Image (cartoon, rainbow, N blue to C red; front, side, top):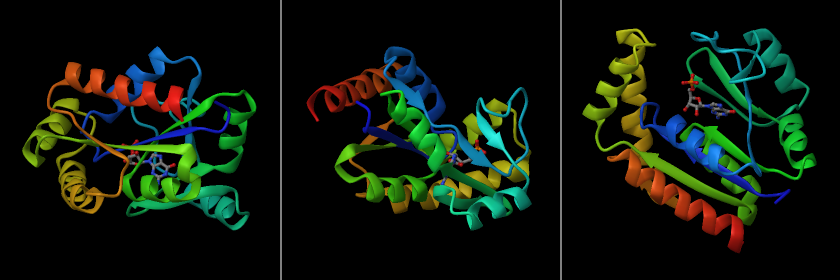
Length: 190
Ligand code: 5GP
């Protein structure tokens, strides 16, 4: 288990966090990889829980020091990345790693980890449903929502054929069951 990884990617609003949290709740041998980011914390988010929060300057410094497995400017001015130290921290415990990462990052991680990795793309049923979900979540400005929706549309196109598994999240209980099945089989059989 100590060298496996599961990669979840999705346009934001596709219900990724809900599915990831469900799977983490079922498997104590899985551990969430906490990414580093230069975006500001939202709501109750805390350093070392949802993300490791840094300034853009600190983030750039860490890039120069080669501290990342992968990193990206996911939104203009907002950097996100997976720290090498985070991967080592989780594997050292004998746990498998769960990544919640944007689509480009997911493709990059799959390339890096190869057969050790199961990559899952979570797809929202449509761009309209995605917009409704983001509005319903109430954490982003209308401008930010439009940016996320535009990005989602291009990500859905880009993702086709690049992931091991595509999970369409139109019904949450069905999506849970499907995720449980595909992850259970990856953990026991490979
Ligand atoms: P949010 O700001 O909504 O938490 O995340 C924005 C996007 O950044 C999401 O698609 C999320 O999966 C992605 N993300 C989070 N951590 C990482 C990371 O370490 N690397 C990359 N490339 N993307 C990440």
